[in-house]
Image 1 (tube, rainbow, N blue to C red):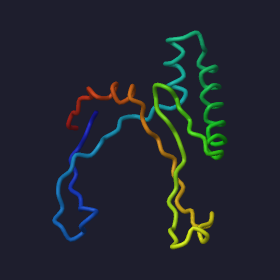
Image 2 (image 1 turned 120 degrees about the horizontal axis):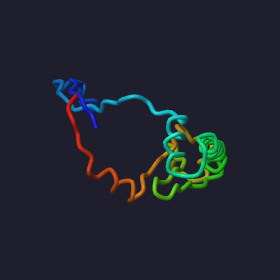
Image 3 (image 1 turned 30 degrees about the vertical axis):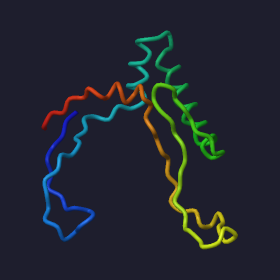
Length: 124
């Protein structure tokens, strides 16, 4: 993985002197079409079939997440919804209007973590 070096301010202490940090650098973005072509090379599906499956997955995921389900993509990881909420002194005062900042959380699987454990970093 490529990285570059950037001078940044400490977000926890704005008065502190800026320091240099390694920052992730990204190459080209791989879209679903490129991914589908590569996947189709290792199975009997055509790129159009792979795209149809990916699009169906992405269409269904929000439905399941909205119903409080977690979605496990076995060797990839788990997707789930989370949120922040305001607190109250008494349980009776807590309501749905206290819920703020909805987030999608992704937790990588142990297999994915293992696959990424031998990553090499190169300075750009």
